[in-house]
Image (cartoon, rainbow, N blue to C red):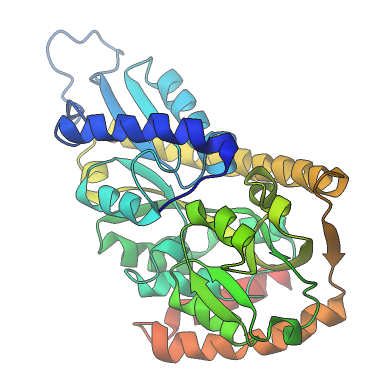
Length: 368
């Protein structure tokens, strides 16, 4: 049974009802009109766009107000303006069209046109995507990490090609901020994770990363997580600060450790066949908007992470002890995490770790 925290329950029920209606109508009502390309056909005035009116669905893994949903809403606004109102994009918050895995399948099958997804929920489908579960891989600086995500050939070309084989085309990778730990006991050393029930995404490599600390990982959807933490089914989890605060995980956890052991990376993705079938004019609009949004979403995640850090620190009704790891303490975790990269190369990667090797070189060059 999926249980949401109370402040999202009403919205979830409403959206779930909508999803049933869509299914009853054959998977979402009328199909969006297809665009065949720029024909410059008769009846189109010189200089006037030949774009036909169309509606796209854009699913996210977060709810209204959180970074992914606000990204989709801003993307929709910009595309509406650029197309003169011809292109309507409908953002869907998490749960509107199923779980994270359901949304991936919908995108693959063309049931939706666009999605923001995190590679952690595609790790069993695109093995190389588990690269983002490697801890202490990216720089401590979130800004520097975003620069690498923008320019990395290993990610934007080599890894993207692996997703395209599964009918998913990544248009951009971006960070939602550093990931931190929340827990029901202090987490300061790897020994504190011994036999600790840690929630993870459905990424085998993420599971391996926490086993390296001695933890007992449990994969689950975030929709079940608040209740699982409250009942002690799991004892801790990782997420960016804004997500911890907005999902109220701090209500059922006593500690938050600022570890910055990783970055929560999201992907802007489209259905490959759908995108390839668009006119050059529409593709250019999408590509231009994707590029513009990289700077926008970096500022948005920073604003939200800064805001919720203060909210959590000042919440006297649900006090949370915030622990900031020293560099020496982070180094102890990093030493445990490094061997997991060899596991990725030998047991996970389908190309003998070539993407990881290339990415490590790019990170080294960017941080020297």
